[in-house]
Length: 113
Length: 111
Image (cartoon, rainbow over the protein chains, first blue to last red):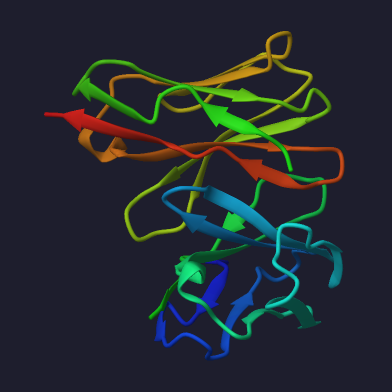
């Protein structure tokens, strides 16, 4: 049963600390997306990769957020330094390029104190 | 980014009734649309999709209608069941393959 896997599922940290969230996309999917979900903003697109290359990260605060795909099986989203306003659920999704829907992971719930 | 909006943030329906959830999108170039269902503590799950060259698509108990003239999308759920209670999102895909989501409609099914 192919699925997108995200770790950690929950993270509580203090302001100023570095946070790294990881995602394993479904094997064979060549597009990966990072979304942030809050009650006020819904699902915000943070970053989009195709064949491991970042195509769009305009939704991401550049000064503290960074997203990478070190290889085809791993996508990372890093926040340094973290702030309380970063508290949200972060979702990773993968899909085949131009060929259908996105498959979502279960999310990483981040709380920054 | 794109603007995908939902007309109603909450919807309550009686079990067995039909539900209609609406969505407005802003990019006339969007070529693919999806409805997702999200249950508490889980990631969004695919329900049904429709391409821009269609105006209606049916699945099991669900129907999606697309009106490109007014840039409107709707999800119809027939014979709504308690298990349908969740937040429903519409998403649009632009030609650049970016997916944008609305803020969601919370559906509550009253037994």
